[in-house]
Image (spheres, rainbow, N blue to C red):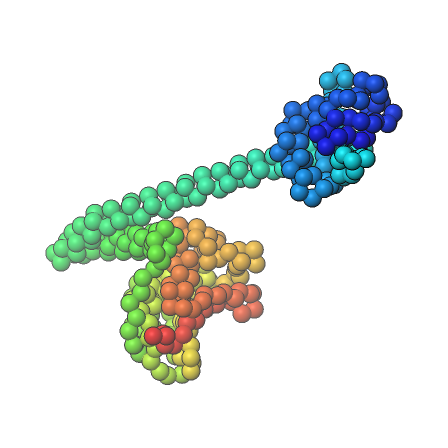
Length: 355
C-alpha cells in the first residue's frame, strides 16, 4: 500500500482488499487511519505520525484494522517515507498476526491472573502477620498481668510456712513449687514476646568468673530437683564477659529439658568450658534421641518432644529462649542427639565483647 504523507490511500494491492473486505475503488482516496480501530487511531495520532516525521520509518507496529463488517483484524505494520514524484508518500507493508495477537492477549490475561494471585498471597501473608503479632502481644500482656497475683500467692505461702505444722508443710511446699514454675513460665512468655515483637532480649554483661557463675546455677538446680543427679564439669580456667542471670536461665532451661526428656535413672551433666576466644555451656543427658525431623526446628517456639511425664512440660519456649540468649551474647545454640552418645545441647559465645 502507498499513501500520501497525510494518509490518503494512493495504491493498494488485492491482498489487503481481501483482508478488509473492500474493493480497490472503495479504498483509494480514503485515509488509512480511518480504517483503524479507535485505539489504532489514537496511536496513529500520538506515535505513528510523530515517529515518521522524526525518523522517516516505523517497524513492527501492531495495529487493529477494521473489516467492512466491523470486526478487528490484527496487523503488524511497517512504513517508510519515500518520494512520489515531487511529493512525499508512505510505503506501507503489513501482515495479519492473529496468532501473535492471541498470544499477546493470553500473555496479558496470564499477567493479570498472576498479579491477582500475588495480591491475594500478600493479603493472606499480611493477615497472618497481623494475627501472629496480635497473639504475641496478648501473650505479653497476659503474662505481665499474671506476675502480681503470683507474687501475692508466693508471699502468702512463705508467711504460712513460718508457722505451719508438719502436716501442712508438704502441701505448702508443693504450692510454692507450682508458683515457682508459673513464674518461670511467665518469664518465658515475656522473653518470647520481647524476642518476637520487641527489640530482642536484653542482657547486662559484666566480667565474671565463668565456672563460678555456672556452678551457682547448677547448685540451685540441685536443690530444685532433689531426686535427680546433676553434675557440673569444668574445663580450662578463665573469666568471661556475660550476663550471669541470663546464663543461669540458659542452664535452667536446658537442665529442665534434660530432666523432662532424659532417662530418670541417668545423671544430667553440665559442662562449662573456657577457651582462648570462646566460652560454652553444654548440658548432656541419656535417653531416647531427638528425631532428626524435630532437631531441625528444635529451637523454634512452641516446639516440644515427648517426655516421661507431664510434670515438667511447658508451652515449648525454653529452647527458643536459650537460642535467643545465645544470639544476644553474639553466639549460637546447637544440639546433637543419638542413641550411642545421648543428647547434648551447647551454647557457645565469644569470651569477650567488642567495644
